[in-house]
Image (cartoon, rainbow, N blue to C red; front, side, top):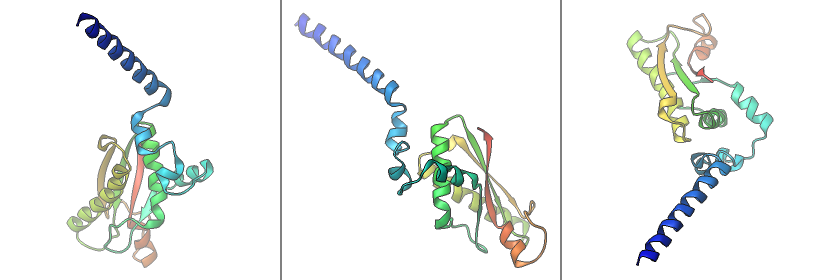
Length: 166
């Protein structure tokens, strides 16, 4: 009985050592679980390193009038930002929501927040830790383009990713 107990202890210590080695060699188990190392699995398509750099360059996402749904064409860019944040757990982003000048201040603050949260939710759904993301709404207070034309309004209906800690 004593020998069986010692064998169990030795086996347990050996298994713990093997698990520790596997974690060190393979990197973060969480990254593997999320598919960060497998481009096709993470993005749903093959993305080259050059394409990934281009996707990361996009940090502004535009919305339709009175809308907060993220456009399909922006998803790969958001996935690239999610991947970057997952690989750099100390990184932090602020997602700033904006609106055009139409509507009340209160309504626009709420809409800007919904736009920021839409972006933040996609990042979190891809595996980014909630503590890495903050959302702020500026409503109509910080326009990208001044003016009261449809083109100016379209430029102001946006959410922006700002890296606070890279």
